[in-house]
Image 1 (cartoon, rainbow, N blue to C red):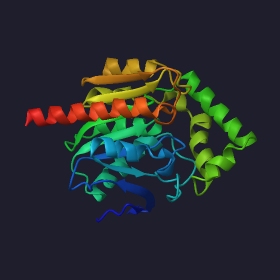
Image 2: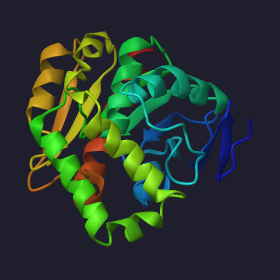
Image 3: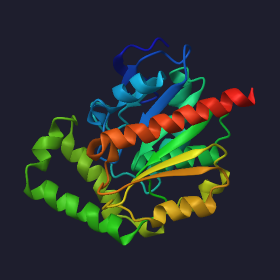
Image 4: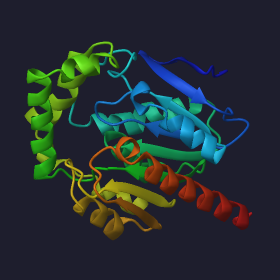
Length: 267
């Protein structure tokens, strides 16, 4: 397909909002960015544009079903919704956009989806992965922070602020938070996928992340058989690209440069 600068991608019953920044997949490596649990293509702000300008890669961002202006999935979401995204939707999306080579970049839920994909698919088009504020296990702070977010949504102007970014903001917020708060999410664990990731990994983590502790990084370092680089950002919480954009961009650009140099040296 021919990718416009923005539009919608139809995958089966899903209609997914997207942006394509810079060169198309046939012309340059592509960085595919997967947003957080309440994110969307638009909520990345100008960070994808800055990544594109600094790396020269094409950057593809999209809103998963239930987010942004994308179509709505059936609710309630199953506990396996991230597994389903990684095993069903993401492979089809990469093929649909003509992905040839590049990186996967995920934030929070998006990072977990990337980890599942990289640990369950031998996709030789993927040269590396960036995991920003990833979750591999569920911690007490994760559930507590999601419960606090839900209280804030129900009692403050957060609903109004998020409604700018999502076509059906109640379905987005309830659909995401309910599965964490009402389901048996305590048994959710992605550790089994990490030893099968065969490409370099960059983890970008805020030291004060309210959704996960340093244990998430330790698990990756213990389980991954591939190189794991860590950019630990002091004074930063769950959204490094918004709270510390310069430091986050620097870490990502340096990692992408290193990966591309290593790939060239190996050829």
